[in-house]
Image 1: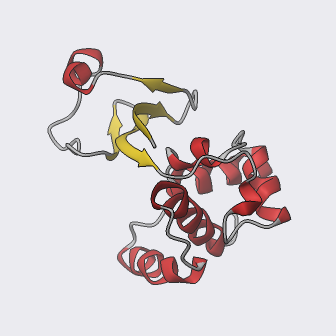
Image 2: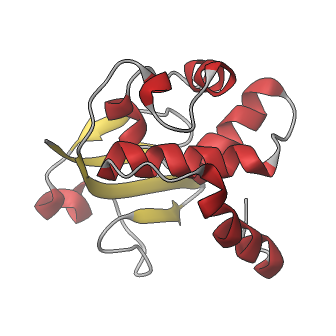
Image 3: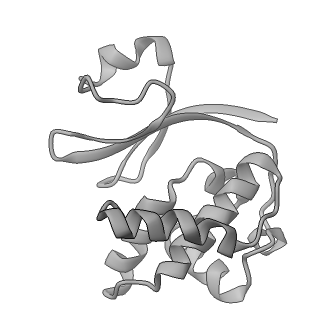
Length: 146
């Protein structure tokens, strides 16, 4: 099992191992920044932070329940080549980045598939992508979906 803590910005898509005790010294976090990981704006940069126990480690993303050849190609476009790399990603950011790369807004079901694959990479639990649809649709209804 890999235990990783990271900071990731949309602009560079870099992943850095950091010491969470020194997090506030390295980055000025707004008071609304989540303690246990999440996404927030820091100036003009969207930053995600979090700690995840990665239960799966595989270079074959198609071993994940919801990843077939087309989704594997999308993940490759995003520079993701392993379940370990996928486990530290955020479905919202992947969805936005894929749209930026392709020049078209992906189908919202792609977001659900990203969420399902990330969930499996983090927990080992292989849920169908449509289990993540109600939460996304609720966010769309509230106007908080990306």
